[in-house]
Image 1 (cartoon, rainbow, N blue to C red):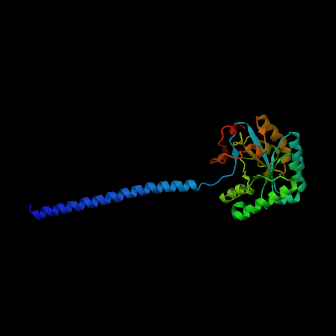
Image 2 (cartoon, helix red, strand yellow):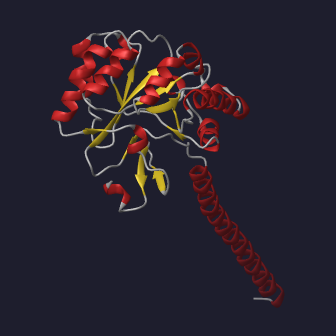
Length: 270
C-alpha cells in the first residue's frame, strides 16, 4: 500500500469517527432534551391543576352538614326553621342578595336561630363567566347586606349552579370566605316528592363522614321531607352540624375530589 493511500484511508476513518461522535452527541442532546421537557411539562401541569372548592370533609367523627340554598321564595322558610328547631339541628343557609333584600326578616330569624349565614352571590349568575372584580362585587354586596341586618358577616360562599373556576375560588379566598360545594344532592329541586328526597339523601353513594348535603328552602317537598331526612341521618349514626363546624379553618389541603383534609392530626378528630 502506498503512503498516499494509507494516509487517505486514515483520513476517511477519522472523518467517520468524527461524524459518529457528532451523531452520538446530537442523539444524547435529544434524549436529555426530551427528559428535560418532560420534567418541565410535569411541573407546568402540576401548577395548572384546577383549584377546587370544598365538596366534603375528611372526618373521623360521623358528622354531616345540611345546607339550604335560598334564592327564590320564602313560603316554606319558617316551616323549615320550625322543623330544625324541633330537632335542635343547626344548618347553613346560602342566600342571594336579592333574597336578602326581599326577606330581611327571614335573614334575621335564621341568624337568631343560630344557623350559618352563607353567601350565594348577589345576582345568582354563572360566576365562571365573570371577571375577578365582578366576582368580588357579587360576594361583597351580599356580605355587607347580611352584616347590616344581623351584625354577622358570612364566611361561607356557594357558587350559583355549582359553577366556578380558578378566578372565583381565588376571589372567594380574597374575600375571607370558604368556597363550598356539596357531595350529596337531595335533588329536591326536581320536585319528585317526599320519598324521592329522603331516599336520594339516605341512600346516596357519597354519603359518609364529612358529607355536605344540598337542599333548597323553596323546593316543593323539602319541608315535608326534612323530618325523615334528619331522623334517617341520625339513625345512621350521623351528627348534623352546620358547615362552619364541619370544615377546617386553616392548615388544610383539598384533594382531587374536593375533599378537605386537615394537616393537623389532632384536628381531624374534632
